[in-house]
Amino acid sequence: MSEKSALIGELNNQYTFKVTNDATKPEIKAAVEELFSVAVVDVQVLNVKGKTKRNASGKTRRRPNWKKVYVRLEEGQEIEFADIG
Image (cartoon, rainbow, N blue to C red; front, side):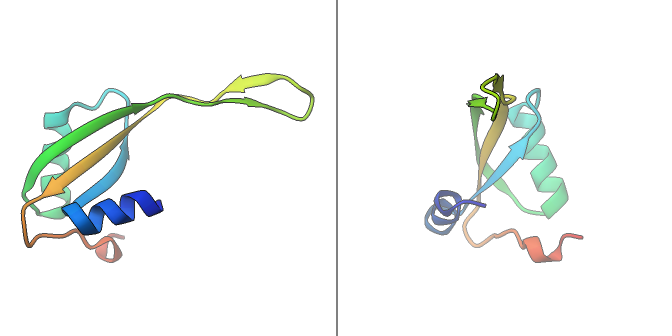
């Protein structure tokens, strides 16, 4: 949970998730609605490119690409992460 995702969550009733690279918008929407019992209005998907890092011996390594999802819920609904477990 980053500061940006927390701010977006408060202002726009959106939540941020990291999902598998092959997940589609309809699959993500269905999964969130089923897991958290909420109504999803919109799903935005971002493909995040992995960074190139250099280790102590100077060799470069590329971190894997990953997918970030912003899920907007209907007004008045929220996801309680404390109840998950």
